[in-house]
Amino acid sequence: MRVRTNIILSEDLLAKIDVIAGEKQKRASIIEIALREYVEREESKAPPADNGTEVADKKVGSKNKQST
Image (cartoon, rainbow, N blue to C red; front, side, top):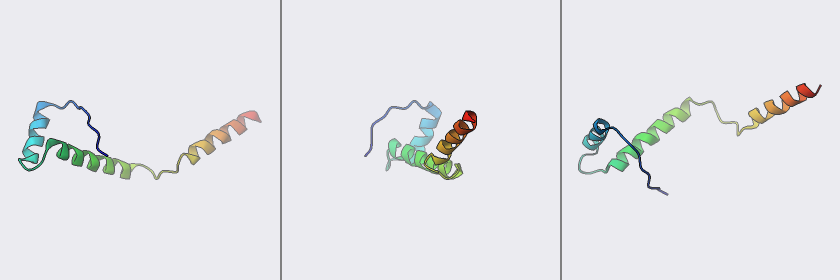
């Protein structure tokens, strides 16, 4: 599902987006593609997700150490 949002961009960046989009594509399409690529790159840099179990285990372990 796509959701409408408002963003603030500099005029020079918007002008470059318009050039890339040309007449065949909309600004929103270009921005969405760019953001998807950015998110994908950032996610690939992150360590594999462990669903929070490692953090939870560390918290439990630290509580056990404090109680002894």
